[in-house]
Amino acid sequence: MKDYEAHDGLGLAAMVKRGEVTPAQLLDAACERLARHNPSLNAVVTPLLESARMSIADGLPAGLFEGVPFLVKELVASVKGAATTSASRLYANNIAAADSEVVARMRRAGLLIIGKTNSSEFGLSPCTESQLYGITRNPWRRELSPGGSSGGSAAAVAAGIVPLAHATDGGGSIRIPASCCGLFGLKPTRARISAGPEGGEGLSGLAMQHVVSRSVRDSAAMLDAIAGAMPGDPYVAPPPARPYLSEVSSPPGRLRIGFARTAPTGVPLHPDCIAAVEDAARLCEQLGHDVEEASPDYDALALRSGFGLVFAAHTMANVARSTGGPMPDPGLLEPLTYALAERGRGIAAAEFILAIHGLHRQSRRIAQFFERYDAWLTPTLAQPPQAIGHFDTGSRDVEAWLDKLDGFLPFTYPFNITGQPAMSVPLYWSSDGLPIGCQFAARYGDESMLLRLAGQLERARPWFDRRPPAES
Image (cartoon, rainbow, N blue to C red; front, side, top):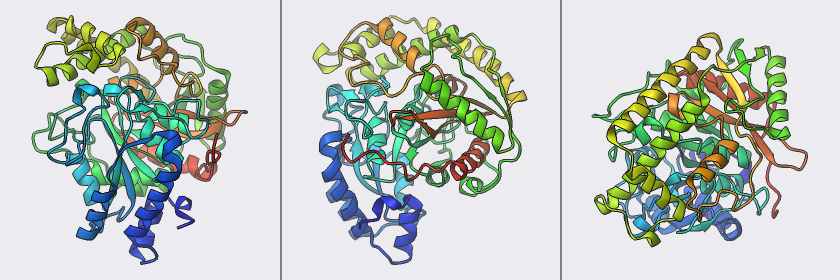
């Protein structure tokens, strides 16, 4: 199937429904591209091709994505019978006994799961260089990282192996690799997608699941397919007025958009990232929106400190889930993960609760900005895609790692803390051909507005046909 990459997921599914192609032929096309690209990218770490063929033989549901090849990130979501390791040697022998609810919903949408993708260990780093599975490389330039922690999924989509893939986001891990790989990536509102049955919430409410994709409509349709609570979930997101897919082709109206060309924490921004946000602001103005330079007023350093504390505590919880409490043999964890877990082990219960309260206070300050503005436009990242090895998980220096994080992603993690939806849109490429994403954040629960705006931007500045060089 030579024109496989010319279609998004919904386009491929439409061909299946019209009888122009079979799911087996789509699987063969994905397998051919997996064999061609994965040896140099290391995006897919657990192929599930035989089980995919069995799913076809058993009959696929006639959902929105019937027969479309799909990949699941090796973090959070479980695929029955497959390794569920969180990209850590600590869980290297963990085989899932059942699908997570989100995976079950993906299957009901007709998706054909063909493998699992690389992640950083426990999803901690904005790169994808786990010691268990090795380094994943960026299709745009092999010496660069695709970002993380959903870098395996993003690299696979950017390379054309699949049109969309599962991703998770606890501090930017959907939006970061979307920016680095020239893709669309939407982090949904907190509780929009159930974390069950394994948990009630991810990372104290910071983490969400969704996808990275080439097209906006694939992202919207997937949200329709997987959104919703399970019985017993601790809280739910407000329901949308209508299907998300219908929003993509609807005009967004005249929006009031504030934009930033400086980071709240004061870290420097690369000129390409400033140029990207200025270009996006001009585009939004040309499309009829009211655009002005403006940013939320909040204590960015307090937010950074609380975020780091929550991540350390949850890293220790991830370890304790395996060990029952004690620290494991150091050889079972990457040095940075071990050091972060040790830090988390020293956090008192009262300190953790006070940190959560502090994050809630800052969230309310950020939310006030969205009483005046419909969206906040920022660079997704403070820097272009970084070199392999820039985020050194072989070091135990947690503070140096946190400083590097703050210098790279000052705009993404605030919306994990507030729970608001935010998307990275691939509107800009640097003079040397690297994708630079722009982030738009919205009010809590308002993915619908973001998808209307994203659809408008996609029509005005199409990116679907921008592809990485064959080898770079």
